[in-house]
Length: 160
Image (cartoon, rainbow, N blue to C red):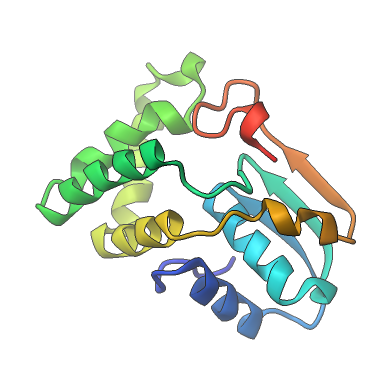
């Protein structure tokens, strides 16, 4: 598992991962991991033997997405980080599971393990990510793109 909690740009996270990765590897990116995967593919495409992009998008943040992120960033900065997982839960979990209290607790635990400082770095990195669509055609390795039909954050039509 790659450490994506210490840097505040997608490029810096990708460089950290590439420095620790073997010379050739299979790459799987889920959500933010997909944004990082696009950067890795720009920086070191020959090192990636296979690629899987799950519930992610090659697009840059829209102004609306950035505004939503800024609102949760403000909560985290003002000591209300515990609220962030509950705000994001409906975007990250299928609507059939919105009432699943055990799953909500698990998501809150995961957020707590990440912590507010890493969360802030990740959100800044996501906001600053480039549009990766222009470089998609250069992908030469076998690639899987998979997104759930109930994905609110990245619906199927936005997954490429």
